[in-house]
Amino acid sequence: MSASKSEEYEVKGSQGMGLVGATFGFFVGFTAVALISPLGSNFKSALGISTTMLGFLVAAPQLTGSLLRIPFGAWVDKAGGKRPLLTLLSIAIVGLAGMSAILLAWYPGGFSQQTYPIVMLFAVLCGAGVATFSVGVPQTSYWFPQKKQGYALGIYAGLGNTAPGMITLILPFVLSALGMAGIYVAWLILVIAGTLIYAFIAHDAPYFQLRAHGLSREKSVELAKKSGEELIPSGQFVGALKVSAKSWRNWALVALYFVSFGGFLALTTWLPTYWRLGHGMDLRSAAVLTAVGFTLLASFVRAGGGKPSDRYGGEDVALASFLLILAGALVMVSTSSFWVDVVGEVILAAGMGLGNASVFKLVARYVPEAVGGASGWVGGLGAFGGFVIPPVLGYFVDSFGNAGYSFGFVTYGVLAVLALLVTVTLRARPPEKGRGPA
Picture 1 (cartoon, rainbow, N blue to C red):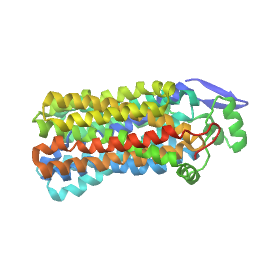
Picture 2: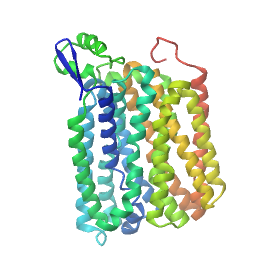
Picture 3: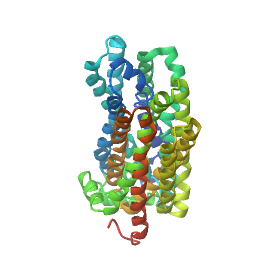
């Protein structure tokens, strides 16, 4: 690990290691919650619940992750990213430990609808791992200059987002070997190990390290800039939320992220159920199709989508992404043919990957003085779509039967049209150079 000196004060880490640390922390956090969705049908059978109730269960961690992103993202502007991220990982570990305990004690014979609230509670705690995203965004942003924001955040979010896909891909094989309880115990051990590794490798950007040495804000800013740090945080918690909340563009980005990333989270949790119950696939096939055709594809598109956002502008890339989401939704609604639906899934994955990359490219552009606060609002309220959308999709199934699996994607068509209107407005009113939020 490299280290530089700002006068006599050592600054640990580098841009590359800052990116590695934040990405690894987010990956571990997402790992903590990635089991509930692909095992949804197992929980549904054991608990004896409806499809709508299952929708709430697989979406519950997204609610926690969404709400916690707001304060924890803003906390980065005051404390740096390492402490907030470790706190979130610790909460997720408690959730995994609780889920492991009840599965060891009660699954499957002791499960019933009366057990549902307890399962929901620990699922909610696991969701703290999802909130690591809004911590890692500013943790990464403060290491990199404006011209490299799209590149850095694309890699950060794209590779971090591969956790659910990789887990969904290997889950059937591990499940057959360890069983439901065993796989949760194994995941608990993995997340604890990952948390310890993150604690060792992660370093905050120079400004936060200099402040930790006891330097004044003015001196820390001066030395941080000498170390190459371009974006300087506000140094406030509540203030970071207030500054970003004053920008109407901040709320426009919230809306866009609700569709792109909230929609991504919703389908990450819903598609295993969709392929199993809507198309009659076995767990292994549904897991592979979800992982390869959607989750991993969207994540890799996001990782590569940062550079086009740097080159062509986040607004133009966002327009292309929401057009793809609209096209994918129309394909999914138009037919229940298996192979046509696979094509629709791929188009949705490409659109959401591009959309997620473009939106966070714009955060640092529109709210450069409070990236943590803006990341909290955008990441938190935007990711709320991951909680809202699955129960809506479940409601379509409960209302229309098997046809509801296809017809439910009209939800994504409506959201894509609204996102396109918001993006056109942003593109028509770019921020003035040298100004903050407006």
